[in-house]
Length: 181
Ligand code: NI
Image 1 (cartoon, helix red, strand yellow):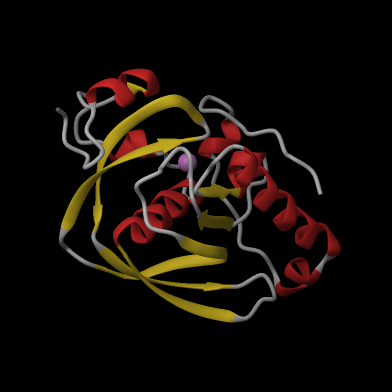
Image 2 (cartoon, helix red, strand yellow; image 1 turned 120 degrees about the horizontal axis):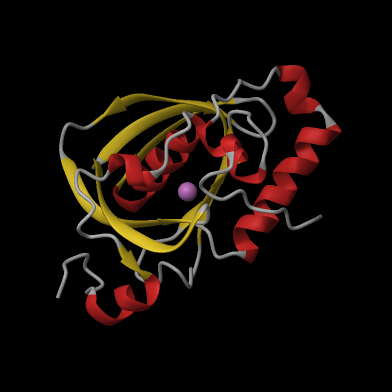
């Protein structure tokens, strides 16, 4: 396994339009080992999700996991989830605001409104169709990673940039419940 280099905002791949994986690609050794490396990279950098565009691959693939996360210590655990060719087929109209950061936008965090719950249909790493009903932070991470696969980052979803903060100032001035103190 290997830790991959993470593309930062400004690299064209972050804004690229991704292509779906074919079943042949999903079964290939290359993609399977890419998935393993994405998981390792996400864990190495304390990410809660990582999209393929973030490691310079313009394909519809993302990994998600939340487990005792140092960057998001107050968030509930989410089991390791691999999303291939994901589609958000249902999303609640109720929007909730929450803090987000991104390994491709280092050192910053901002408040982003997201659907409170959603249904996501995708393929797992073996190419088997899965349907995920997610709410709360899990739903937020799915929307964040799905955005990456459309060439969007969380900054594009911020209705205003006033909450944007550096991490050191976030730790100092922002309360863990997402309200500015
Ligand atoms: Ni991100």
